[in-house]
Image 1 (cartoon, rainbow, N blue to C red):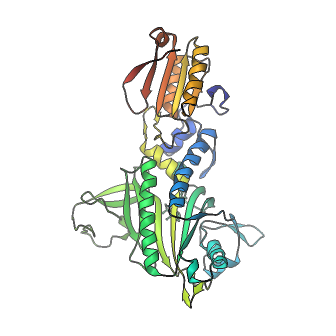
Image 2 (tube, rainbow, N blue to C red; image 1 turned 90 degrees about the vertical axis):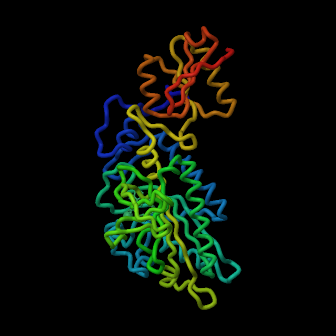
Image 3 (tube, helix red, strand yellow; image 1 turned 45 degrees about the vertical axis):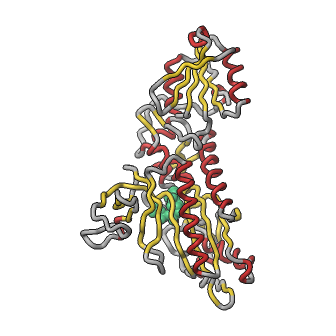
Length: 394
Ligand code: ATP
Ligand code: MG
């Protein structure tokens, strides 16, 4: 894409929002804040969301899960069955008995019940990538906590408890594959949290960042973490390796998984051979992941997008009167399969470089009269300081 065609320009002035992710994402024009907790995703930001989504889709499909899309607007009736209509999270439509979905057990369980009649239909799972609404009281952490936000929610259905256990472990693994591709694997830890109603613990995936609202005790020995909320006793030890040295860290929950057993299948009377179906639910915050990536991957100049998340992999910058050669290089790079943002604008060099650092694409290529005199182009990785010259035959 030519940068001259990009409708939303980066901003020169610093944004003084309450969080780093909002400051950088707004300044670089990835998002625009409509109100606290509600954002428009501009072309670059939308590309980032789509990239995260496709990483997640690939992993969900590998699990054998089938993608659906459920409505955001819900009738009151199924929510009364589970006694969740009055919970504070639910936004309600005035004068109508409708609510805006903040999770989808109430919709997916009746849907699954329609589809599955006999044991041989099990196990199965359904997932969606969809906008959720939550009446959050503290929506001040940029895209980390929205009152409207994008989530992947996966629901699995099992006749046998052991099948639920097997699937649950598979999802754990696939979540770590996702965090790896998102560049968060070193900072994200499996965390024990206060449980499911029936199991002792549920599991959260917590990414360590100062912007996080949770506190976790991290075991540096075996990398298991425990959400501080659940810890009752003063002196605590790692439940897995019994290590007593746990460090407290601030973290943000990017995903969580729950064994729900029959918590929601019971109110909807979803049974097979007279036994309630077992269920698991597995959430992952897509817009929150985008925010967490920015919180972790940035420096004083701007964002540093991980390869697979970045809207483009190369930022091609032309400097001076080299339009013909730069246009050609733009074509060549794209033919090689690169996604290129081409700064073809007639602007001064300093400004172009400052903007490139702010936007944060993984590789910057400069083509100028100076480099061409040496039959070269200049290549620099966003996360490295060294600039390399590479031979280029125009
Ligand atoms: P939190 O404790 O942060 O409020 P939660 O326990 O309410 O999260 P879930 O209901 O399990 O979260 O939702 C699944 C995932 O959706 C979370 O792990 C998180 O990544 C994301 N998520 C939850 N609430 C928000 C929000 N307000 N804005 C953005 N993402 C969210
Ligand atoms: Mg919440």
